[in-house]
Length: 397
Image (cartoon, rainbow, N blue to C red; front, top):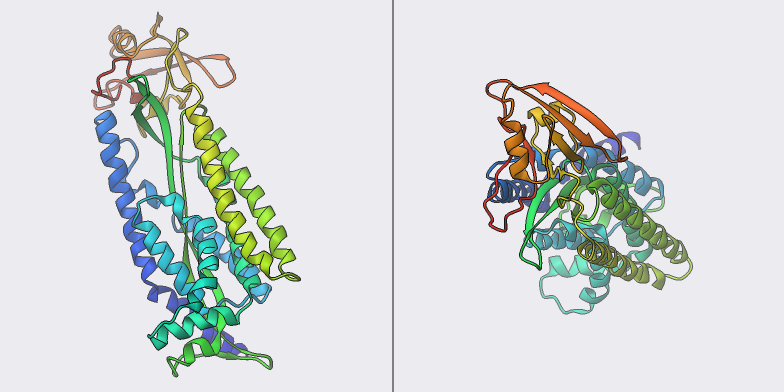
């Protein structure tokens, strides 16, 4: 028996590379990087974050999360129909075509797959291959699908909480009054490979050579599925970390609610489908509430009478080495008060070999930072600000 499990495990991991969603997902991450760098150059005439930013944590964080999900799913003995896996992969591919990472939330992908699994088996499908997989969906408990949804929602919440606020990208947009507004944008994508049990006869009925695990109770196969979890949020009314972690806590609360309905589905199966609907509505409401609240609030990154707010810090620049942080307020440069980007630039000219800044931190406390400037470094420290002019001619300073 142990040998059969080991062989099936190896085959299950190998099937991971047979899923077309995996390769489209890799292309999607690549395209996100291209779009971000183009947008940064348009706003600031410079690429701010490295081109491979989107790959940061894409696989490693997702791999750890996938291992945890696999242990839970296998430990609970959850068996997922092949047709349902195919449906989630198809939805993942379709949502990636929109170039909107937020649609790759399990609240949308898995939940919509659950709802569609109610409707598709009722359709007449002439292709026997597809028809068999659609029929298999109804032969399996919707409870298992709801468990998968709840677990992946928890994973989404924890990933956003721990990783969502890291390396956000500064951005400029035009306000309703025609002025420039600074904000930060987070676009994250994680690949979460999950090892799932599927009914053994679901594939052997089509491919007789497919290896299976036989137990005294049933026959199973293992398959590794590349689930994609996406996150997208723009923040202008607060620091990125504060707003994004608030969203994460709301997603975790939604996961708890979905879990409660999933537990109830053990006795009342219809609650599994209701949990999917709650996940869709709840996740969309979280995004809508955050977006509305943020847009109706004053911009955190707007300059004021006390100084000039740091919108962004270019990696490996003098500003980063001086430990200047996004959202801090610069009040003086080389002893001169600054209120605008122009005044900041002029104050730097006082001493091109050395600079001293007076900075107001997040706690409202004043701190002083100073550093010698060397040839070959960003001659204007590598700081990004919101421009005072209405024209969209942006530069990094």
